Length: 207
Ligand SMILES: NC(=O)c1ccc[n+]([C@@H]2O[C@H](COP(=O)([O-])OP(=O)(O)OC[C@H]3O[C@@H](n4cnc5c(N)ncnc54)[C@H](OP(=O)(O)O)[C@@H]3O)[C@@H](O)[C@H]2O)c1
Image 1 (cartoon, rainbow, N blue to C red):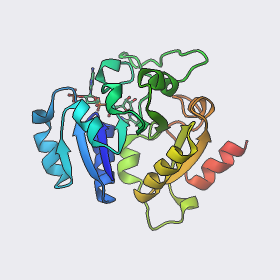
Image 2 (cartoon, rainbow, N blue to C red; image 1 turned 45 degrees about the vertical axis):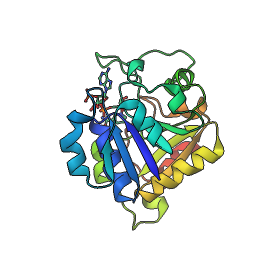
Image 3 (cartoon, rainbow, N blue to C red; image 1 turned 135 degrees about the vertical axis):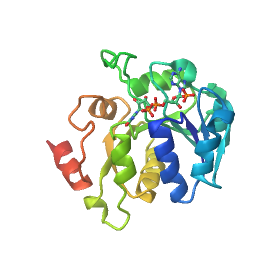
Image 4 (cartoon, rainbow, N blue to C red; image 1 turned 90 degrees about the vertical axis):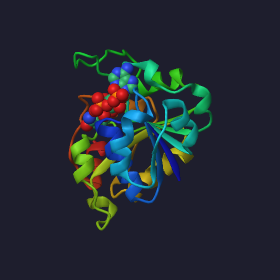
């Protein structure tokens, strides 16, 4: 599959490495343009290319957002994401590190409003990039693998994201709709930034 990655920081580069290892082709982008990504692309290898934000979005059959949520100007033009599965890995932190109070809404519902026409699946937002880099265990049964949570309103889109999570050596755990699951995956929620297996995650979600 071709995957566009918006953001080439800690999360963007780490997921790019994992997607490439699993056999996918990646286009990665940042705010400064493809020239600034030469060294990163060299490290990522032959299945990576650096593009600008809109070209990376257009490249992807699936697209992952890994830019600061507080900077909507970092997102691609929605026309390049129409009808695509867009994984929202972003968390609603202000520049000073405080969590934005969204009242009854959640950050990925707000992302969906910013990107009309995209199929938003919230995933990869609860896992620290170092845990992502060190956590893959493809040899283990799913119950024993490290959990990556996902939420969304389209079951088929979520199933594809779950398969991708399994391909890179983790186990996907469905937390529900973009709203309900989004609440469970928010910063400071019980599941947030916890190194737990799928088995342990399912026990927590049962409560
Ligand atoms: N770090 C984690 O462990 C982690 C875990 C889960 C989720 N997340 C979420 O993933 C997203 C990215 O986090 P990160 O830690 O990977 O961030 P990061 O290392 O600071 O990288 C941010 C990336 O976004 C790009 N960007 C585009 N527009 C930007 C703007 N206006 N201001 C700043 N950066 C801009 C940056 O481009 P340039 O390089 O050109 O500046 C950079 O490639 C955030 O929403 C975060 O909440 C992070």
